[in-house]
Image 1 (cartoon, helix red, strand yellow):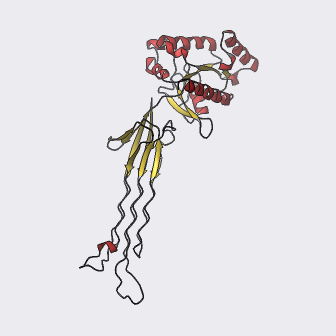
Image 2 (tube, one colour; image 1 turned 135 degrees about the vertical axis):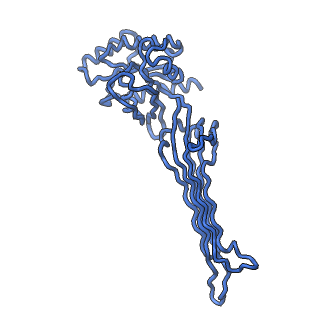
Image 3 (tube, one colour; image 1 turned 90 degrees about the horizontal axis):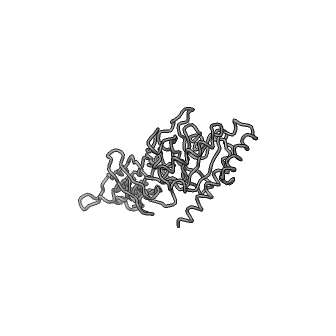
Length: 333
């Protein structure tokens, strides 16, 4: 899956040079002492292995600061501060106007210049010569670069949401993450995978993907078919989402069978099972449905009853997914 972001980077303009002359008592013809302008700050992009997606960058404009103007008494302007934009390892940086690839950041802590700051203008002290002892001009600072950048990242989601069309996958991902997919009460609303970031706290988070609805026969190409089953292969764990009103046990068996038919390794992935739309049923019916799954050999700690629409039970789901994910990652070290 491709995670994309479009940003604008604006380097700082260089400061203007200064036109100034010494003004001291008893020195009627002081020489030129105008200082140079400072350099404008530049914009860099750096890869950081702690960052997982580009979603927090999209649509933003990043500006480095301008260089200060030169001053009298040969005082040069202060250089503008450069800025560094952090992106995930594996990000491709492209100039959107030309299509040219600027860099492919394949390693941690790789840094590339994407917008160069403008040069500071020279003050009139720099133009003094033996034939021109009192220059009355100075250079203006140069403008910093402005570029429209497209960032592309091939991303592997941590958690894949698997379910039939209209099971509530888009509602779930929009309720627990920063993704805002299209939501409507008809099948195949989602025709492309939606990525989202689920925040656990200020440091920890994971990436979740809403896989477009799988139907019976998907492993043979029916419906959206093979086009999206391949995305599930790259996720670390699965979340089966079932509409509690729509034969959830039968649908669960079908989903498992389609995954097995496509790739037997998929049913060996760790998973949790969420019975959605519990707000539409009495509590005793919800509990009865849950007991049905337990009698079929599904461990109780894997079963969650939720309402994605009403945001009921979602915190328990988030923390359980994070717990399983950490266990999987530790086992793979």
